[in-house]
Image 1 (cartoon, rainbow, N blue to C red):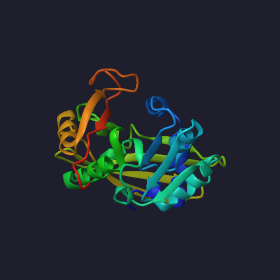
Image 2 (cartoon, rainbow, N blue to C red; image 1 turned 135 degrees about the vertical axis):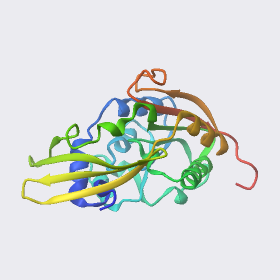
Image 3 (spheres, rainbow, N blue to C red; image 1 turned 90 degrees about the vertical axis):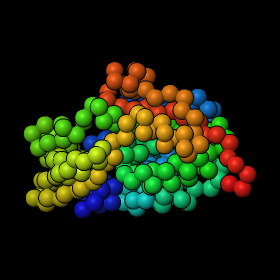
Length: 251
């Protein structure tokens, strides 16, 4: 099953239990709060952990995701009624409607092909007001995070909200030219086994900067971690802050 954590109702519950609030959420919330009462886009919002928190902080928030099962979970969160939820992709975004756009939890890496990433950035530039902020994260390929995605090092037990437990592990199935294929394995207490496969693109800092410049963004900062460390001195992350340039007439 492709990207089952977002599309299969049972795996969405596992994802939601495993991915709790963390320093990345603190960072994104703090950056968005620098623009008071902002109109915020959360692209690839998933189950809405950060999305709902942004709305609770006083922002006008739209969460968009192509995975219906994830949005069902998001809409069930307390406070979800304060968010506008859209099932779809960045192609649906209105023009000049947002002050800040965020892509969290390494959503940017799911845009594997350069053409797909370029289209997404173009949609985001169109959706942001001139000078609007784009904030996202991506893993630094120099950290080689995928080498820890193996059945031995990735073994974990996930406790669900209903008290049930799931045994999970990950294995990499392919590495080529900055592209990593992997599969998550899930064993449920009732004996059901589910697999979820995905592919991520690990772009270098130079590749990210070039793609943003081509799309009409100015890069303000790229940090290496959630406490604004320099690249190579944080948690193996690229934490990117950029601004949208003015659009040409007719856009």
